[in-house]
Each structure stands twice: as C-alpha cells, then as structure tokens.
Image 1 (cartoon, rainbow, N blue to C red):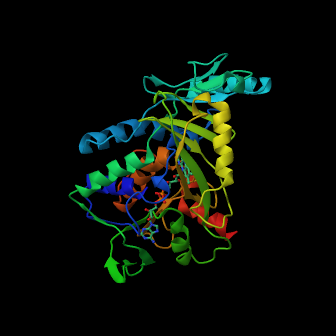
Image 2: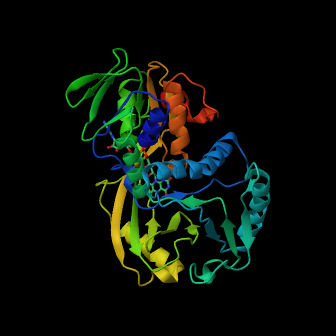
Image 3: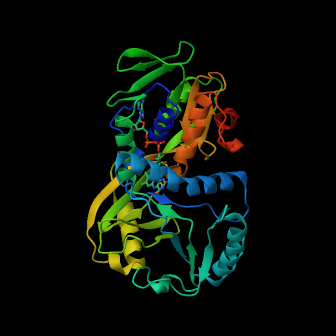
Length: 367
Ligand SMILES: Cc1cc2nc3c(=O)[nH]c(=O)nc-3n(C[C@H](O)[C@H](O)[C@H](O)COP(=O)(O)OP(=O)(O)OC[C@H]3O[C@@H](n4cnc5c(N)ncnc54)[C@H](O)[C@@H]3O)c2cc1C
C-alpha cells in the first residue's frame, strides 16, 4: 500500500519521504500468492463496484509501472475456476452468472461468470472435483507479489520527488507537532500517510482516545510455492479457501491459512502441509511437484474487516492506509490514490465506500 502511495505522490510532484522499518516489500506484500479475486457478483454494492473498478484499472496501472521500469510484475488476467461439487451450488452459480452480466461491465469491456459442464482445458483441475460443473470467472487475475513490489521499488528508487529510507522504523507520531520519530530523530511532515500494514493499528490506537477495542489485528497466513511444468496462463483454482495460482516460470502458489492466534508469526507448519495435500488432490500436475518455498506473513485486518483509509478525525494531517486484509493487491493502487488525494487536498475521481473510512472503524472500536 505504501509503495503505491509513494508512486501517486511522485506523479503529483509531492516531496515525499518513504520510510520502511525493513526493506521495501518485505512485509505481508512480499509473499507468494497474488490472487486478484473479485467479490461475488450478487447483492451488488458500492463496495463491490469499488473493487470491480479497481480490478479493471489495475491492468493499466501495472502496465505503466512495467513500461517505466522495464520490469515485469507477473500480472495476467488468467481468470478463476471454482469447482461445483453439489447440484445446489450450480443453481446458485447460474444466478451469479446473470448478476455478472449486469454488473461486470466497464465501458465496452465485459467480464463473465460462466457456468460450465466440463472443463475449459485438460490436465489442470481433476474433473472429479466438480461433479456439478465449474464456474469460470473471466475477471479474476493474478500478479507475482515479489515482482510487483520489486517493480514499484525500482520506480521509486528513480523517483524525483520521493526519497526512500530503508531499515528506518517510525517509533512514534506526533500529529500536533507534525513530527515522526524516525531512528531516534524527529522528522517534520506536512502530512503523514501511515501504511505500516498490521503495525499501523497500535500506532493509530496511541493517538485515538476512547477506544474500547483494538482498531485491528494481525491475521497470520501460510502459503507455499511449487515447481511444476504448467502453462502460466491457466486460471487460478479456488475452493473453500484453498487457492492454486499458476505463475510464470513454472511456479504454482498454494495457500492460504487464516490464523487469528499463533505462537510464531513467520513459521510454517502442518496446516500448510494440509493445504499442499488438498491442492495435490485437486490438481494432478502438482502430485510430483517439489515445494520450493514455504512462507508466512501477517495480514492487516481492521476491526470492521474493510480497508481503513482516510484522515484521522482528531489529527487530520495523519492519513491511515491499511486494513487490506485478504484483498490488498487488487485495491492498493486505488486506496493509495485516495490517500494521496486526501494528503494533497485534491478530489479523487472516485468515491471511497463509507465503510472504509477510518472514522467508521474508530466508531466500531469505541462501542
Ligand atoms: C499467506 C498470505 C497470502 C495472501 N494472499 C493474498 C492474495 O492472494 N491476494 C491479496 O490481495 N492479498 C493477499 N494477502 C494479503 C496481502 O498480502 C496483505 O493484505 C498486504 O500485503 C498488506 O499490504 P500492506 O502494505 O498493508 O502491508 P505490508 O505489506 O505488511 O507492508 C507494511 C510495511 O510497513 C513497514 N512497517 C511496519 N511498521 C513500520 C514502522 N513502525 N515504521 C516504518 N515502517 C514500518 C513494514 O516493514 C512493511 O514493509 C495474503 C497474505 C498472506 C499472509
């Protein structure tokens, strides 16, 4: 989120210091999966429209970063397959298909929620996984998280208005004085955009009187990368929280666990083994595929589950940009643009859903 914010600041010519406690892209965004999954097309809402617009616009945003840096972000709109193991799920999927025809439209572009009897290609999902057929969604995409963060970081290292500081932890923010404590020194700011992932929550809590509950929490996730000789254009498979994502270069990512309590944030264990087993069960090509990496990270989940964006109600020069939880990659460029518009007193060309406002999350935490 912070990298996209710095990109938007650069484009607007805003003098910016990008400080990261570690290295750029070394947080939850430095993972393996990168699934860009649309919400269900039924019960349409401003939140779903926002995500749809973000997923459609991301393609051009990434192309611009790739053109500027010459680096690939591993993006592809390869779609998604959802097995339908029971007849009633097929009925529901047919309803969603009609919903997608009405809502998944962007100018001339149309995206679909096809309900298939058989599979679009051979040798990817085991046909037995979908006794009642498969959904093929043509809006879903994927990006390689580390390739994207590396491209954004490369863009920022060449930026004219952004200075990058790594291994520089912000230990406190004083919005009244307009200073942040950075490596033992007070650094002055006009506006501060706080995009520290799950670590944004305690920093914001210190500045927010009257809270009854934390503003958010860290939710651990584990994922794995397998090496397999597969077509990188194959659609992502999604079933009951299990993702199988085909990437470029003979890699397939498998994830993710969702853990509210954990002893070690960055260890992997038998919960990941179970996911890999389930993936191999459903995808024959993964049965003999070696695991090349196991990885864990902490997602930022805001108290009201939605992203948390906007000027802090009591400290308007502090702008929150966090809470992307499980869908950050599809939204980050838009949420960051909104945060930078707020920071520069400019109007964005789009509206943020009200539930994303930090004031909404503070109200929920204060009850
Ligand atoms: C296993 C797993 C799978 C996932 N799969 C997907 C997926 O398929 N699709 C998707 O969209 N999302 C997915 N997510 C979620 C996504 O990765 C996160 O929501 C997203 O990366 C959060 O981005 P962020 O910029 O808010 O936080 P981060 O990427 O964690 O970045 C925060 C940055 O702030 C820095 N920082 C922290 N504290 C300070 C401080 N005090 N001072 C200075 N810097 C600080 C950190 O060093 C870090 O670089 C997954 C997450 C996990 C764990």
